[in-house]
Image (cartoon, rainbow, N blue to C red; front, side, top):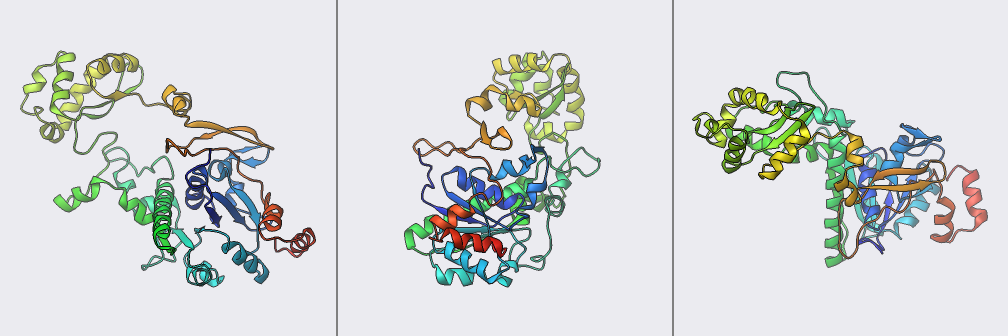
Amino acid sequence: MAGPLDGIKVLDLTRVLAGPYATMILSDLGANVIKIEQPETGDESRNFGPFKNGFSLYFMSVNRGKRSVTLNLKTERGKTIFKQLVQQNDIIVENFRPGTMKKLGLDYDTLSAENPQLIYASCSGFGQTGPYAEKRAYDMIIQGMGGIISITGEPDGVPVRVGTSISDITAALFTTIGILSALHHRNLTGKGQYVDVAMLDSLVAVLENAIVRYTATGDNPKPLGSRHPVITPFEAFKSEDGHIIIAIGNDVLWSKFCEFVERKDLITDPRFCTNDKRTDNHDELHPILSDIMCQRTTDEWIHALENIGVPCGPINTIDKVVNHPQVQAREMITKVVHQLTGSVAVPGVPIKLSDTPGNVDAPAPNLGEHTDEVLIKDLNMTIDKVQTLRQEGII
């Protein structure tokens, strides 16, 4: 079954993570994505581990379902071929430093003049404008500058990175949203447009209530470990054999919990009788709850608390996530088969559409695997011409 983006063609000039993740989403949803790579070297993430039979599984994880074409965009002939491809495609996605595409003569203004319907998306560290536009950016740097590290980790602890490349991923998601929004506008008007997404902007956008907590009080939010800043108890506790997360979001659930653990006195205790008071007096409440929660195993707590309607859950390691029945039932772990790696487990498509579902149906490509196919079939080149381009280092 064709995905919702069936028929949409994408030229992918991205590398490493943020850009490739965005184009992977488009591919999963049915778009035809051609990944343009530098001859011989390709996307630098092809050199990132782990490897299986010499092929990067890092690269595999964010480039599945794409076709790879090698093309030297530093040459005039390479640029000419690229412009020919632009005429046949709907979307360009790139994540070079701002100014790079303009120096190549392949910026939005140049290409949109030739194809007014073109949607051109740039995903960069700091965006195309502002005093930091041309600075280099990596996820760790953006996590620090974007403030998320300042609210992550244990109180008074050392700075702690969020455990995934969150600024890359959020930028990828916002880039995809921007592209789809521009696509809808083009369907209405026939006109493409430029999409400018920054990693820093994206991370600021997902700081959630940290921004309003600062602007409302003037106090800087700080790391709180696993606890929620304004809901209590809403955190992880040690159990008899591990940890248990409880999320008591209102006073009714608090009463149910207190009755179950035979501590009705906590319901009327003036320090804990409302959520605001429990949050204000967290330092006094936490040791009381810690003594209670360590008396049963995690599974025992989950069974007991679910029976009375109190939200709770374990802290799963990745092996448990991969094999979790809910994750499996939602097809969130799927497999692709590559000629070098064999079968590789990768995350599935989290967007479930009733009529045009997305699909993971192909592995990441070998470098330049589809160059001949695209040039011959899409641009009507002869085999001899393709061979000449390869000899001259254009492809």
